Length: 319
Length: 142
Figure 1: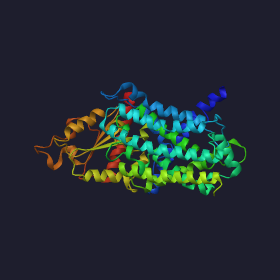
Figure 2: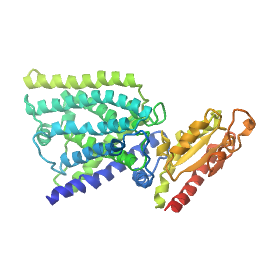
Figure 3: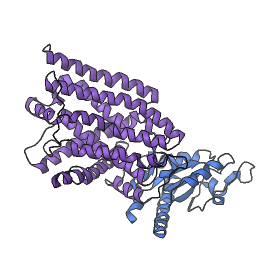
Figure 4: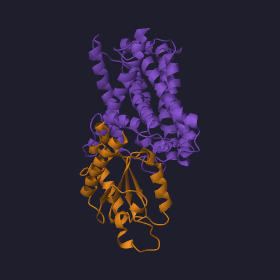
């Protein structure tokens, strides 16, 4: 019981994940600045931002739906908090060891986007309404990609029948080689990277959360103070969760049995993901809403389906 | 609590400026040579996130209601910086029928950055001075 509480509130969930995520987001900002030839902020910049936002005045618009407006950030935050507790970290933490945690992962991954939609919809701003309609459209596509990738892995591991336990997906890879080096799953891997960019809303897919251009921060436009800080913390937790999911799906490698060394190895692998995100952030321009929708429905969906077909063929013994 | 003054969020509003000052403001954020992000600054899309308001332009009759709306929406404590000659004194547009400036008719201006347009170094100096004033305002509020 108390071990569960420690796992939920301190390590690896709760405080640890929040601080790790905030530092990762700051490192992403530093990397973007370095790629552009600037200096960038300090590595704990986002922690200072959060402390400041908790100290600021919270404004609530006159026309907003008060209750939903205030509590919408909690949906995404609690979803991500539960996921960090729920997911196994290779070599560090066992997770909850459910038989169907892949399905629960797919459900919970959608919660931050749903909290954006609820909060933006309740804030009564036309800019937030435009942003919510865009986010809804895009969410339908990128969550679809994630579901296909998850089911591809489940079919591959279960050898025809679905195997929805993340622990077994990791064990399979430890015995039979990592999926990152399996050519049948390379299309799914690229689709997963595109999903990461789309769900984090970094530049090529920034259209629902544009800062400088048409919709002025989108669903966040009416938020200030504590609820805004909750959204920032949710983003931080999301980077940690996506990194854990990436490692479970494609590269659950461990070094020995020691928890500390495995934790450092986990952070190193996470930093590689952050470097990739920063590189995309610094080098790519943003899509328009219709271009982004068309791109997402063509490229990653097709890639994920290619992997699914290859996996089905290999399960049938044809390749 | 002085650590939180290392995280100022900036919001800029153009009240009928010729865009000269806006270009200089953009260079402070985007050009490697003058990086305001190393002070922790970040340009935000909404005045409700902002701590420091940067105003450019002489406040035309058309843009005045939007300026007043933005001033209403800023959460306390905030600092106002007038960038360029126009919001400070209306400059060459002073006695025009279409001008409702200068800025200090509507709000107490904390920092004036004169120049037409001001150099990026001057703007960054203005932001750094605004940070000092912001720190004092936080102390008074406590």
